[in-house]
Image (cartoon, rainbow, N blue to C red; front, side, top):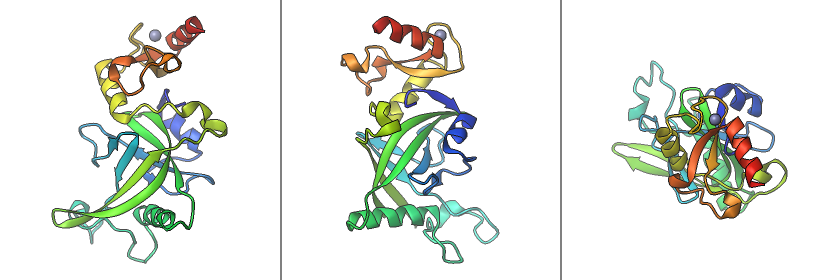
Length: 221
Ligand SMILES: [Zn+2]
């Protein structure tokens, strides 16, 4: 799963719902979901720090009372006093830091281009804080890659950083490097991870279609 490039619909099918927003606290019974983008035109400046992600909270929805959400504090509560997604993720991070609960597990998906996504793996939400940005306060979250090897996450420990995926996607122009196909693509390790190949260097990653990906792994076995 971690190396596959999937459509928006495949991502929604996996999560069992239509994903409409970037932050989804406790979407599943066992986990939350966040969507990130590190493309140049991304709405929020999410970034990787080693294997950790620093994720920016979201602005208030645009409305008559808030015509310019990007100029006001990122809210943790709605007008009626319920928690926003910023507030729910923030509360979970604070409770974790106090030792009152385990970290919230978060599945992270990365946008490659409109309609195409890649699963970046399961992360733990470990911190939340507010930052002054110009005249307003924004919310930041820190997520660290889990070493959780239980059940379905077993094959997903070889996290390819988002910036590497973005670089490889751009360099290979969204096509299989062998046949040029643009569907069912995978991020492939040129030198396999099991043989010591790096996941963190774009030079060791390439795009392959499902057929060529399978052909290659058969040859290596
Ligand atoms: Zn191919």
